[in-house]
Image 1 (cartoon, one colour):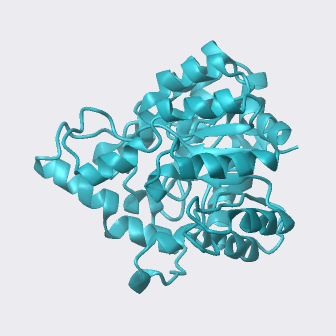
Image 2: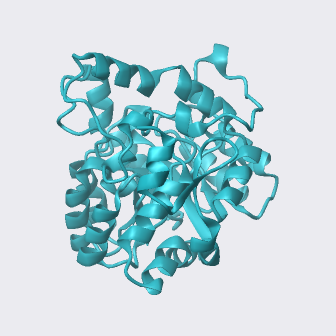
Length: 346
């Protein structure tokens, strides 16, 4: 398989000048899409080793080629979670190559290249009008402040805040970020390696709940059970956001505006059950194939689904095309692409 094969199978797609995918503008330009799940260099760079944190100014490289999702054209499948297939086991040539791509050079270069200017370029190619930027905070990190500075009051961007659950001055940090104008907060269990139902996370969530701002958290396990025998440390981080760990939050704060990112990943069916039980819960559909999105619409409705892409790790085109294929009416499309986000953000 090559990129032309993908274009042949999905004639809604085209290739941009960077070798990335986009949906033909005439199919989507009327929706003025809000992407509820994006990152730029300033919001995620601090997780890189200090010796390679330097930003790369290069608007010609292909993010599709560098990302572990899908992990190259041979792994691409629009019908799978994460738009990629996985090997059956780590103990194979393909399995080892998959791990190397997940944590290797390509992804590091992608993060370093994800400038605000590159995001604007890719938004224009994908008819995305606005992006919600989600920093990932380190302890005593300035990711939120640096993200706000990078966008420089550009009204195409909506910036959320991020506070590490082990920060010793959580309340002060939340207050400072609110004064800077953040519109919500981002939680990152698998990046921090801290369970969503741990005491530290419960304390953070309780304080964020008091702000009455929307909270978005990565949710679900990202790798299917078929890709077995991962190193224990990787599995431990994956399980920090197992959907079972979210139950206490919905029971303790039934009116919390919590968005479960990525549609619960490989636990999409479990996410649907949670959303059926707790009608105040939202989800962004980044990484989900059209079949799963349609199943969500059928079981819980379209009113609590938000368009998201997890840019720069994904070309925005894949999530856009998944929504187009999953929806049956303009009402559904307009709500998921923009209307629901406008309502949630006020």
